[in-house]
Image (tube, rainbow, N blue to C red):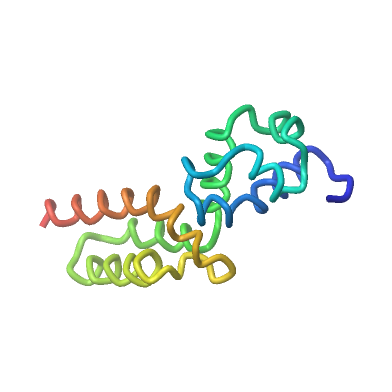
Length: 131
């Protein structure tokens, strides 16, 4: 990687590790592998992220700032109705079940499904109970 500011380096690392986390999962990925795919040393990785957990959290946070999460959040704000429930179900199936979370990284859907699938299930559950 070229010389980057600390913030740009962190962003580059987060971007670089998405595929390996998606492919191998959190538990199946080592710090050594993460550093290798990011093109940095393990020491530099630890300089920016004190643990694998903090890197994984940063990756999930980066995912939550994308257009897919913005769309999901917008739908969750709609008034409770059958049509909103249909929109939520359609969104969840098309983005999480069919893996359309990220067109550049379709495997990333596995990572985000764990986090945002729970949010959607909670939203659907609350909507169903309020009817």
